[in-house]
Each structure stands twice: as structure tokens, then as C-alpha cells.
Amino acid sequence: MANEECTHDCSTCGQSCPSKNKESLLAPANKLSSIGRVIGIVSGKGGVGKSLVTSMMATISARHGYKTAVLDADITGPSIPKIFGVKGEIDGSEEGMFPLKSKSGIEIISVNLLLEDEKMPVVWRGPVIAGTVTQFWTDVIWGDVDFMYVDMPPGTGDVPLTVFQSLPLDGIIIVTSPQELVSMIVSKAVKMAGMMNIPVLGIVENMSYVKCPDCGRQIKVFGESHVDEVATEFGLEVLGRIPMDPSLARLCDEGKIEDMNSDYLTDAANKIEAKLKKQ
Image (cartoon, rainbow, N blue to C red):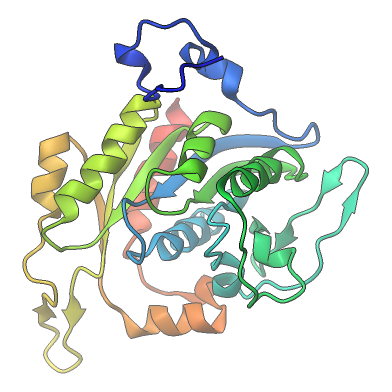
């Protein structure tokens, strides 16, 4: 049994426990699933646009011809089905559950697809929530997937820890905003990833600016961005910047994110896909 005072930082620990071997903590995927690369979308705080980035990255990967999936691990704040306009009952068999598919074929699982009323809150304790996320990996028949994006809850609590330990993440993308406190927030996410030996693939800045509809000038609503400074501090790459775009907000509200025509994250998806395909 692990020490009750375990910090989950194996690099500075002299104890002998299963945590030393990451493979021993990984949950097995469903036997009928064949999943290629798994990418976590994380943030140190809520409200910065993780689900937006997740859905945009998944949409772009699907457009590139990859079989794509989204595992919605944000159990208490699930928004992926709404953004993709996915509704319906989850079917299953003795082998497991089947994810629903978006109109472009992206496979999706979320707790909101299992609730009778999607507006009802999920009032569960941490271990139950963490167990549900693990079941989304072990009990769902994903089939053949090239890229799976995991929309994770904010912070460094039970569920992010469960995802880091139980799913074979190939890396994470950190989503942030331009405010000054971004350094502290990114620092927490980077250090947690380091403790779990998970690569950080880069940073995406959301709400970077507002584009004036008349002159096209970029208006920095939150002041000058600090993301480049933070990226340099931690040796990370800024993968993309997303403005406050009313058209994106409308598409999310209407469940039509797959109709987006912006290219804010196209370069980010290209870089991630190329990097992980080479490994």
C-alpha cells in the first residue's frame, strides 16, 4: 500500500510501491477497442475553454481523415455533447457500451448521455466520479481510434489524477487565458504532469483578443498576453491563440462546432498529429 503522505512525485521518493511502475496503474481498454494516441486537454482553473479546445481539436483531426474520439472526463461539468449536438440513448452489449457519434463520425462518451435529464447535476463524491472516468475507458467499445481527446476537469484533484494514472496519455495540452495569474495556473498543471511523467505538448491561449468588426484591430480585453513569457519559462510551445469569437460561441450553443470555418487551431492539430504519429 502506498504511503498515506504520498505526493505522487516518484522522482523524489525512496519508497517501493506500485506507483513506481506507471504500467501497473494503467487501466486496460475494452478488449474490442483499438486506441492509438490519447491526448488530455487540461487547465489549472475552470472557465478558460477546455471543452472548446477539445472539440475544435477533435473536429480538425476528423477533417484530416483520422478516426477521432472524445472522452468527456469533466463529470460534473459535461459540455461535450451540447457542443457537438449529440443526443440519444447509449446502447450496449455484454462486451460494453457503445459511444454515440457526431455527424462527422467523432465517437463521444459523456455522463450527460447517461442521465435521464441532462440538466440534472451530478452530485457524486470524488471516488465515484473518478471511477466513472475509468469506466469510460474500460467499459466503452471505442473500436478503432487514431486520436482520442480527453476533456478533463480543471485543477489537480481526484479526476485529473485518475486520468494521469489510469489512461495511457501520450501528452497533454494546457489551455489558459491572457491574465497575469496564468503563470501560477500553468505552473500547477506543468508540475502535476511532471510528477506523473506525462509530456506537455504545448499551450493554447483562449480569449486572446476581440477582433473589431469594423477595422479588424485586435483588442486585448484582458490586457497584454503573458503566455509567451510562461511558455519560455517552462520550455513549452504556444500551439495557438483563440480570440473571443461570437461565431464560435454560437456554434457551440447550437451544437454545430463541426461547422466551424476558423483555422485558429489548425497549425496546433497539424503539429500534434505529426509529432505523435512519429513516435
